[in-house]
Length: 630
Image (cartoon, rainbow, N blue to C red):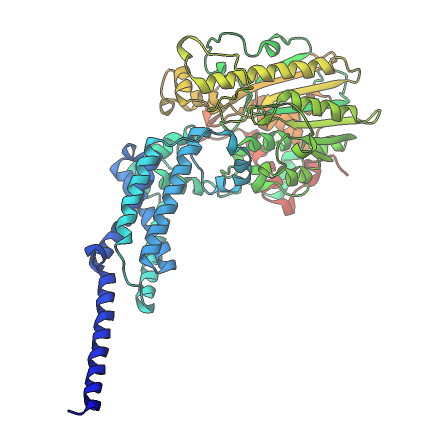
């Protein structure tokens, strides 16, 4: 054999060896950790189940969901994993990425529930991330058993996935997968939303427990509850709606005001106090000392009432929206913030009504102007000024926030800046009592302790101590304006109750929150309302009112001109005095569930038609019904 022939044979053998090495490396990749391609596909088929287990373990709800309801949830998990795999076309990346995101989402849900008393609501809560970022530093986050257990399961699944892989789909296989996915996804979503297939399968009511979203998410599972919530986000046109019907509804308003005073205030100050509430509205309990001594003592030229709101533990801007516009959240698709979803330029309400009557309109909030999109919203509502935290200067703070007293110092300074004879409307949103009651602060002396059968709840005690500080600051404000000669009306109300220990509330109720009736649950949506004047004022009957009526009622009590919409609201309030979270009260005290299939009062129908015209049919809005502006 020649040298040349030998070299040729050697090169051929070396080439075969390289091919074999490549083949073996490929096989090695296919059999990492003894997991072969078939096993990889089997694991992929199980991944939605594992993702579900990790998610609901982390939320702490895994054992409370029945088998039938689990199957409903799994259908959504298969849709999620299938869609990501179809888009990415990389098995390991798709499975690992989806599972990690689900775990993070579950952990966030767990802590949101602890801090806010309500689960993470998608997609609405995502729109509030700026607001959450501004206040998160005041919350104390500690690792909990469900979150740690979920992390352990996540790591185990990631280990399996790291040692498993499946080849990418070629164009043909991907097309078949996409077609199959589209058919199955469409079939399931149509069955779920159009034909309510969930009802016979898993005993899931089409309307989840609005009075206990926490209970719904625990019983139905996160995916199913979110899917039902999304269905409620559709803005449906009220029966009988037309522009003509809206015009007729506004023009037929017949409310006639009975003035409580001949005086119209030159200064109208409305304070929405963060988390201000008196939880004794649920049932009376004792404390080492009274936490509202000044408010309790106020009698002369003072109206006190119970204000029903639509939010608990958060969602401040929705109470704000109802007060300033008169629109009821009840008639809107379920959203976390109407400010971010529905406020647009020329948003008529209290500000424009007062502006038309010669008032300078000022909004104040001692925190970021980005919170709940307030900077834009206040411009849309027609406020002349917005004084946010950057314009407060060096004022007193309590915990991490501007105190109520520091806030009122800035309010007083703005009042003192006004020109002689200038009429002033100030809408002030406080910050002192914002959630984050887990952590104590050395400079904050906690004076109040609940006693008796509700003793021993640190968050509740810390919160009640903050209420005492709010009471002291309100006394400071009233003392100042009681010496002012100009007629002044001051209104203060709470935006929602506080998310302190669930066990504290359950002790007040004497039962689990999941066992509450809707009417009992509505007591968690009641806050104080105080209206004070430095001039003589009669006391009308105002035992309870809901925040959607509050703006119109303030204008009425201040002896100011009303829009047609205001008159309709006040006419409706005489027949339906309260729009609660889960039901409404009629004037005779009857409580009616929103979900009850009964004919709604005619005034409610007219109210809903007018609100739809203002919010959803902006291009055809009958402006003259909502504003006094020319």
